[in-house]
Length: 304
Image (tube, rainbow, N blue to C red; front, side):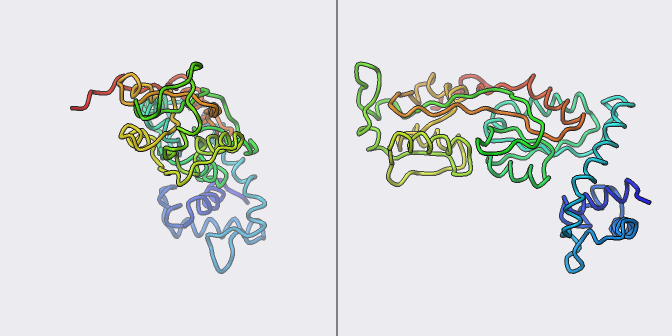
């Protein structure tokens, strides 16, 4: 006979990659987790994990993994429907991109903790491509990041905000614009391109826009931090493309200026992408309410 404890053991051994980690997560002993896995295999009369690697699912194990996950989600939904939201206890693995971490992640964490005081929120920050891989591999319960254009949407999702990016550089780095307020291609190409890491959605959009316009920069400088890109641009080391809503503080302060030319970067659609359960749906609603990509402190203090 199948039990939820057996299903939990198999699921978390797979997701966390080991019996010790699964035991810690389920507040059980490692031997208890091993016993539950064996009991489920005997009940189903099938091997769920490879004999030579007891953390790697067999083909049959991978085949029924989705069904096991649905059973666990059904249990969680039933418990939530008959109890107060505040009583939910458990881990919730949240992955966000850098722009969320720089702006409204603290507000989201505070609001989630107020709604689910017993929930253990585990946020992590990474590139959009990495977050998507972790979501597909069930390493995260929710990701908040731009959509990957070619990514088939197999999870629930809700649009939070559309964010625009603008070309920026140090004031005076480029010659004066033409009568239309645009800068010439040759003057811009003389400068190094400061761009986000290749696994980010912002990089992919910029690369696509440049390719469409037939523009190429020699030896671009890649960096996995938007703040670092802004500081490099502030130092006059090249031109860059940054989210306008947050980095407008640099413009207002006089450290950067926005410039226009023939290449216009696409907008980024930020979404909350998550599993279809009550907790995730509620946290997505909370995210929509607190989403704000402006600099959290307004104009940053003037540097001496």
